[in-house]
Length: 126
Image (cartoon, rainbow, N blue to C red; front, side):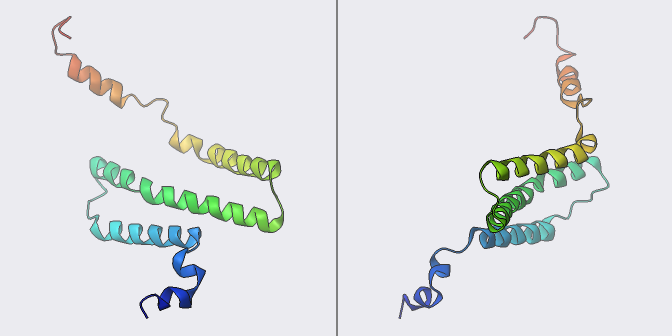
């Protein structure tokens, strides 16, 4: 009686599909974070905090995309080097479309912060 429910569900009870686990984890995290995040996003500091916390669900979503890509390419019959070339083309296209929005080459916040901390110190004090 104690072990009958896993037997009734079969393999799914002991080893659920990876995609299903990722979807459930992603949905739980997003709902939990949205419920608890009550920071106003009109202030840059709080907006930055919000952005950093969205990295975790985006990582799960990226893993789900990878699993889905594998399933689709296997179903269509694309394997090996062709699948690698397709994945590289998709990733390159994504970077090309969004690079201008995320270009931080002119971002000197950390350098300026370090200079503001070290500037008032006497010469050769460090």
